[in-house]
Amino acid sequence: MSAGAMDEIGQARATEAAEGLEKPQQLMENDMITKDRWVEIMRAAGLSDDDMHNWHRQFERLEPDAHQEFLESLGIDAGEIRQIRERCRS
Image (tube, rainbow, N blue to C red; front, side, top):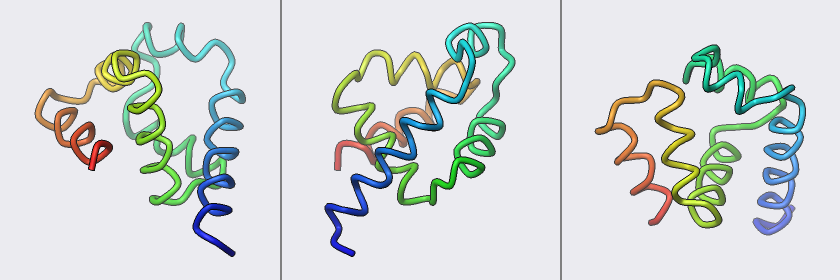
């Protein structure tokens, strides 16, 4: 399978995972979803580490401010957020 096809599959899985959550913004605002729980949800949706990296990369590319807010909502510290966002840009 080509790298492009793999990216498309990863994007489709990420979309399915996000759509599968009922009112995800409300859940995150109420501190009901942590980083570990989010990773668990993404893995349950079938995303690999590479798929999750692609998900973050696309989020950063399309909505950088919302990506920052999302990472903060998961309770991730500023240093780790900076690392995640830098990896997305490379």
